[in-house]
Image (cartoon, rainbow, N blue to C red; front, side, top):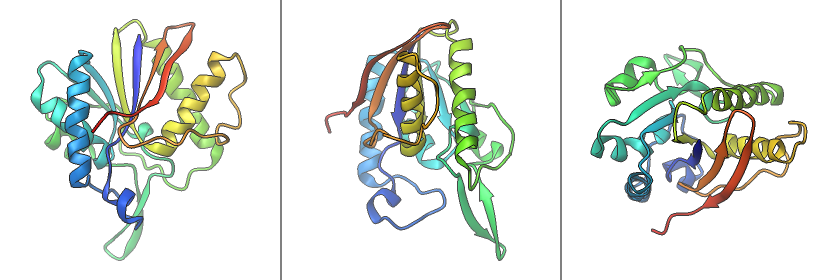
Length: 209
């Protein structure tokens, strides 16, 4: 199975460097999402796993809206490291992206694959647990698809790519927070993944805009 690991398009926080709980895309980010849709069409991607954070879902929205028979699965465990915190009714609450109801309103034919748990203030071992879970899911389901796109976030995706390289080299999955790849918005990394093999094809390819 070919797996395209993709960081979301440019968000308002990427530009302003001012924290927002779950930022939207900028105008430039929306253009990047359109360019990504062209790339995904070229590669005949029919299956997508996506974070439930708004900027990731907005990144795949043009492709899903303009294509037929696209199967989208939304996962809270693909959200950015630490999730987010926001103020609600005078209280600070944690979040892991859109609720299941909000996801379905945006993408009526998607599947929310996990519940309404919150990811916030994660310790390293909890991030590593998410990554182990993701890699196992990929290898367990590698016979289901010929290709798959995964939409997630810069820091979390950097840890995931680190883990994939370590597995490819036959090394233990530890210190995933070291030597992290600096991923550009809508950068694409491609791996061939089977039940017993991981092979990198390219990392951090940037679409020409």
